Image 1 (cartoon, one colour):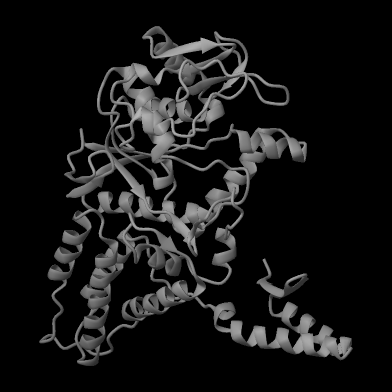
Image 2 (cartoon, one colour; image 1 turned 90 degrees about the horizontal axis):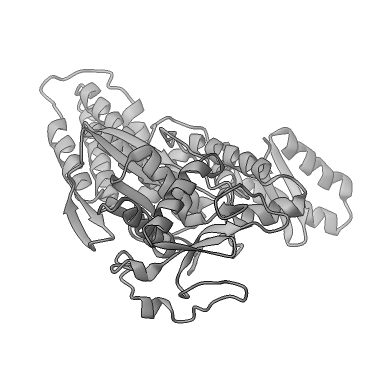
Length: 455
């Protein structure tokens, strides 16, 4: 089994340290509803976890919740609620979305604000070893104390400094030194520390939680490519300088970015599509086929048409699994051993899910052909279900009335607009009310009328 590691920039033989594979996944910063970028990341590494279990490994999967961070604090202050209340609300929504996507719940879900003692321990250790220093109530990591700083992102300090500067009021020794502990500011949550009241920096949170729950060296650290620098680079620096042991993570796995057109989807940019928004029109299995139809390291561009294509492919798998043979011809057999072997071979090669899906489609076609000849397809259908389950697919036939009816709903919306234009408001209201009875809500906006499924 070979995985591509961002650190070495090549595929490496996977050799876990012990009987249990340890995986740390950087979780969400819950200050708003989760979007498809979060869903893509979750589906990919859920599939990695499922495949390792399929291959006989015991897996310990830790995913944190960053519940103290600038964006959470800013939004909570605007809403006039405690940051923890805001974070808990959207973290709960995130895990509801994950359940809807058939993503397995992490074994451990540490919240940053509950792990402050471990963070203080790590920060104090870095100060004691000369890798960090205090300045005006804050503590910074001394990047020049680590000779190989930049090894994950393949950057030198000189290249990192292009455009970097010391902000007014900061007492950094070097522009690239980063905050381990931030001195308290008015309107922000704060905890006691040897350096005064304050709160942890983002990077130290993940190092502390990984060290506490998975030990000094982990097998796999995963996340999006946008986290390689500075977040994961700084995690390596903190962790390895604190423990004195290398590597902090044996394999670094990063998924490609989720895009709308040519842009990365991001809350900060504002070009986001919510998970709930997509699951109102598409099945979870359909979304997973859409994500896994591309290699995890490649960028993925969103469109309704692409998910519709994935849904159509999924339907072939669902029909092959759910349609039983009515007659049994013992002379006709399907070679499920070969299908299973091919599936394992492509997944062993850096989780090649597009090829794994292709093998499932081939098996579905063989099942359909065998059924036409009256063969017993029970074993093959069982294998199809099992291998699809490794990819997190349920193969449950799900009615999609709103997806199938979308063209008719759009036509009714157009007709309603025409009626309103000629002041036939009663008839227009009848269309709205009839759609509402069938579970479709119309909303009139400045950009036109949009519809959504009634919850």
